[in-house]
Image (cartoon, rainbow, N blue to C red; front, side, top):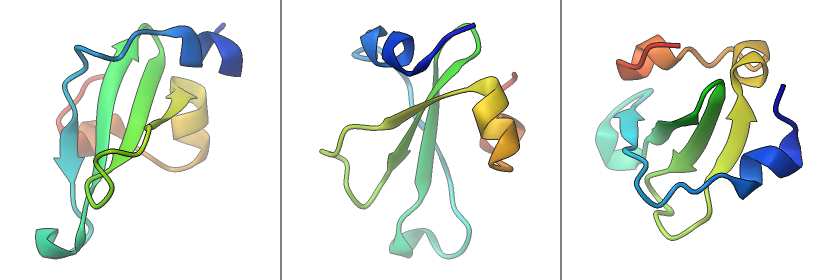
Length: 74
């Protein structure tokens, strides 16, 4: 199982981020990308230069974030 340091060691330079908006997309959206087996990067479209946070699938699940909402498979 990946831990926090393992997640941040993964290269995300080629990651493809997908948006999911809770309201009008003019207000900003959450972005999500799979960055490895059981690993995800979560970004903010309002702050595209900010480093995305990284989570395991279990952590996303515990936070109530479903990759399917972004059109991504677990």
